[in-house]
Length: 118
Image 1 (cartoon, rainbow, N blue to C red):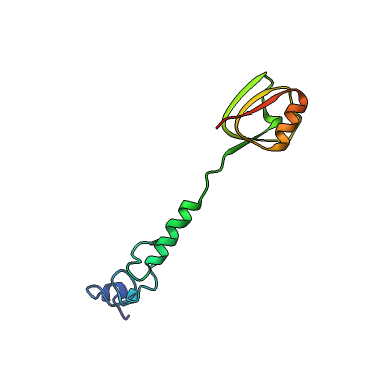
Image 2: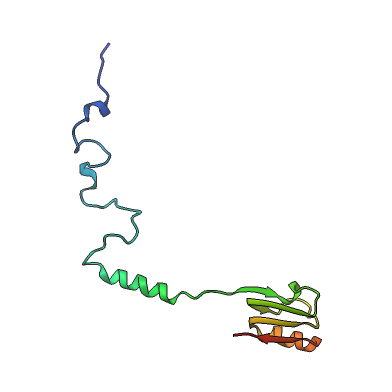
């Protein structure tokens, strides 16, 4: 019976043999995936600038609520929310950050008010 040493045992002490950390395999940094934008350095500085610009352009979206979801009370303060027009309108006074034109028209037609706070 022939007894052979395992490949992993043969490779011990040799950094350039087989796969794994520190081998010849990653010399060109072609498999450096998953490091994000780190280490672009001097030659890819323009990419970093574009990345920062896209961050500035992102807007915060407001949470939304429909007329149908409003409670059956005379006055509601919703705060930092946008009011949309889906559903039946009620005669109610609503304080919101934003409201669609259709929502305002529906509530005013039913005998209520929409007060937009800044």
